[in-house]
Length: 110
Image 1 (cartoon, rainbow, N blue to C red):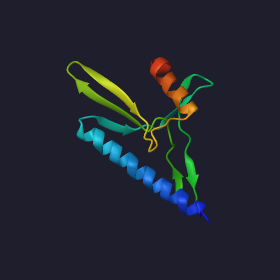
Image 2: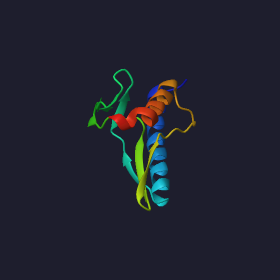
Image 3: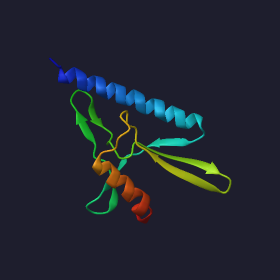
Image 4: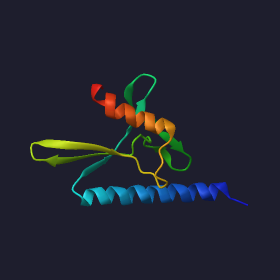
């Protein structure tokens, strides 16, 4: 029988470790990486602050935004900007795909 509480804790640990691994990889490649604390509101067509999450015993945790990281790198006279969503299964959900599409087409208008 599956202990969902233990499985959830393991998934959270593994996900955090994977995000750290991805972050370090891009930093070694010369990118400046920051945790993205915002989310895309598709209904109102804007970027909003991610809602904070209350975890019993740990208190209020920073919001879980989409995507996970925003990165930039200076190249000659300009900067390159990139967003990274860390996925161990390499698959975005339908909503995540819509948010990413919105960011690339409309995000500059906010």
